[in-house]
Each structure stands twice: as C-alpha cells, then as structure tokens.
Image (cartoon, rainbow, N blue to C red; front, side, top):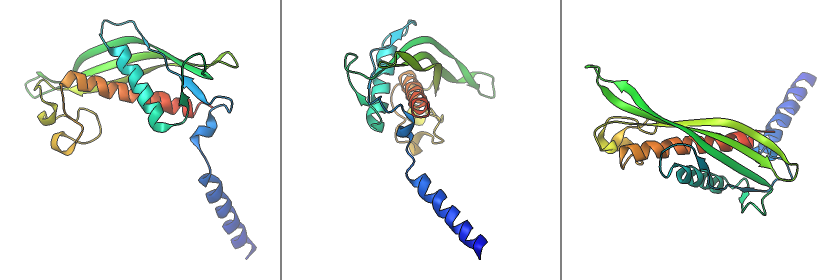
Amino acid sequence: MNRFIIVVFMSYMLLTSCGFYSMAGSIPPHIKTVAIPLMDNETAEFGLSEALTDGLLKRFNEEGILDITDELKAHSILQGTVKKVHEGPYTYNKSESVSEYRYKIDVRLVWYDVKQEKNLLEGTYSGFGAYGLSGDIASDGIDNDNDGKIDGDDEDEFGEPRVFATQVAVRKIAEDILNDIMTTW
C-alpha cells in the first residue's frame, strides 16, 4: 500500500511540475527586450539581409517571448551577418539531369546582453530550400519547403521557385535561432 501511495505521489509531482514549465524561463530574467537591427550581407545576393531580418522579426513577434525595440532601449541585441549563399544541384532524375536545386544560406549570429556586456549566444546558422526548373512550384512534384506535402496538398507552395526557396531557408534559420535563444540557459 505504501508503495502505491509513493507511486501516485511521485506521478502527481511529475505531472504538475511539468505543467508549469516554460521555455521563456530559460532566458535571463533581466532580458525583456531585443533589438534586431538590419543584418549585414557579405554576399552578392540583393535583398537577403532584409529578408533575414524581416524573418527574424516575424518569428519573434509570433512567439512573443521578448518585446522588440530599438537598440537604445534594448536589453539584448541580435546581430547577424549573411556569410555565404550556396546554390547547386540537389536531386537528379533517371537520365542524370538535375531535377531539383538546393538554395542554402549561412548566417553568423551574435545575441548580446547589453546590461552584462557579454555574448549570450554565438554561432553559424544554415537553412535551405529546394526548387525545380518547371517555373511553377505549385505543380513541380517537389516538396519545396520540406514539410512532407507536395503541390496541391501544400497550401503555401506557390510563387517563383528561387524566391520561395529563399523564404524557406530564412524561415528555418529564424526558427533555429529562436529555439537556441529559448534554450540557451
């Protein structure tokens, strides 16, 4: 009987303690805001720094973990540099012709704690998107955003192939950065 009571008590403690867990709790308590200035771009890709900065701002706004503000008021600053873009063959068809290209972006990022004057997170992040040569990603038979859905089954696959591949890469990088920030501590 005592063993049963202990098992029930331990189960109750485990379940209730997990119910109050929050990823936001892993961010240092004095950091409530973040500034995300326009990223630098060391590549020849026009508009890529804007796309990455906008992607990060969008993900932070969606999650609502930290308030976004300007650099003068921010508790932390997220700075990045687009280091490299690589585009090349990804898959081949039976006749050994390229059927799909992969568009990959590498970004160097630093998350800086203004109050403690130290880097909280530093690293290189990569993301990629795939696209075919058909010109219409809504009917190219490719899972362009790597979500397991193809063409008509995927409501967000539309637009110019290379632009869409860029958007997918940016979204992946933004998600990885946000995940790392929430689990830093």
